[in-house]
Length: 479
Image 1: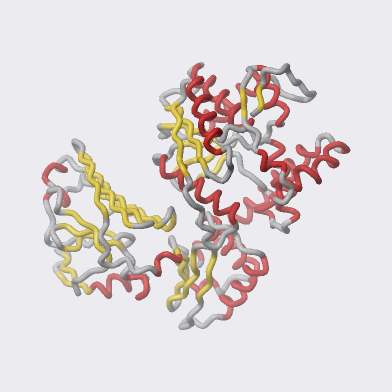
Image 2 (image 1 turned 45 degrees about the vertical axis):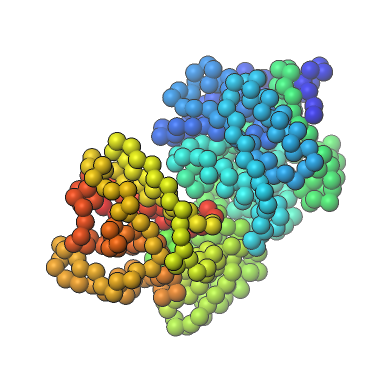
């Protein structure tokens, strides 16, 4: 553990604490959504997150951020012998700053098609998201040197423009916003502020182990480069900014192509895809994978997928694994689905938890890695009996009677109209009211004859979210 109590260290070209405090305050106010309730700080106990937590606390004390709650979160991966001491250190720092700290434990890390480092990162973000509400903000302390190292590391790996763009200062990740206020700040500035304010921080001894590629790059490659070109970090960061601008243009093109191929959620038209050039297909595929927060396959792998899709027959059986996801063909449609959906989840017993308030009812169902959340809002919510609503996988009815149109429609036709393939139909959770199917998640309201007044009431909002280990979430506002 290092301490700032042993004198001060002030380097040239560093911002003062006052200047950085003002920069961070302006950045947060420009990027925190008005709907945000909680500003979270990912707190490892290292230098950068320690200074970030300290500065954001000062910003809150000065009331430069209003009507928000400040919360720290520490993820204990239990991969180091000092993990318990680090957790205790983080708790002490938060106690001293009068900041609430949530600690999450990682019991095990499953690679799931990723490397260990990437899998640990995914698990970390799953735990972040578990604690956050929609539109919450998570702040992380990555700084200028981290950005430069990320740029060069990805260049060595042969990344394209999106990879060379390195880290973004603001990114929407799932339901929350990820902010990195220090990306343009030199580490020496952070160390100067820490020493000036006698802040203590943790030095991870594994950072000195050069068996890890990133550590080797930092310890063996960057040191001589920085000794010759003192502003090399800023130069690399500037190139990353240029790459990000160009990557944004490719994203715009992919967005246009997505409309052309009728990409909707997790599927697209193979027939329309085959009308695009090879380069645009590759660009669209990587854009699609990135939108699902998947690790982008190598260029060779993406090219192989593109070449196969360019010539696959419309009645073919194309399948490819992409990390924990799978690309799978169904007739003229191409689906991107979690591999976990191959599990047999019919007839499983879900643990049910109900939260009832004045005009709000939330039901949480969980089984293994599956989680389903049903939210009902209505002025008549009290009329809905506790045991009348349930979730089942699959439908045991052959047809549905539509009251408004006075006709029956088969379940098969409903799935066909929504382009849901046969192998996926028994994996869709269905909302039942009094043993009668009321809605299919991802398909919508079935408008059956048997419904309570509370559910028919147009002021009612029913939101169904379901996911598997943080993936493949569908949100339906059924009315």
